[in-house]
Length: 114
Image (cartoon, rainbow, N blue to C red; front, top):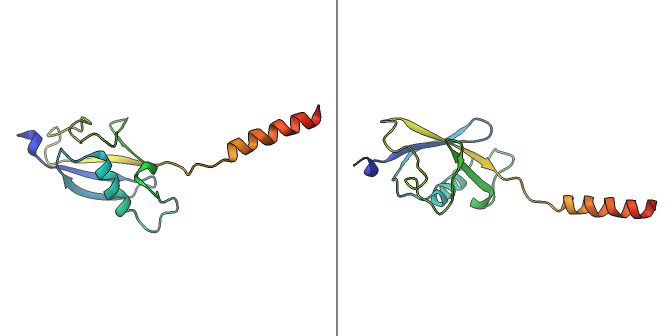
């Protein structure tokens, strides 16, 4: 019975603002939640994610996997009757090739010095 109850979740962004709360079934996947977060991302935020892969959801100190459901992710179903569960959203910084450029530049300067 507790597994059938909807979970009320809100998603806390890096600056303390929230998306939600909204109610979700325990069978909802983490990937689907990330799609919802992406669709409802505030337009005024600087580092907006481009895809669901740019987002990490964290609950109780664990990074949640896209292919798992809320129930499989051990989100506390029924432990907080009527309570809202807060999940933290981390945006992965855009990848850049600056590191490889720095390494190459550093190697060249060493060779030039020798």
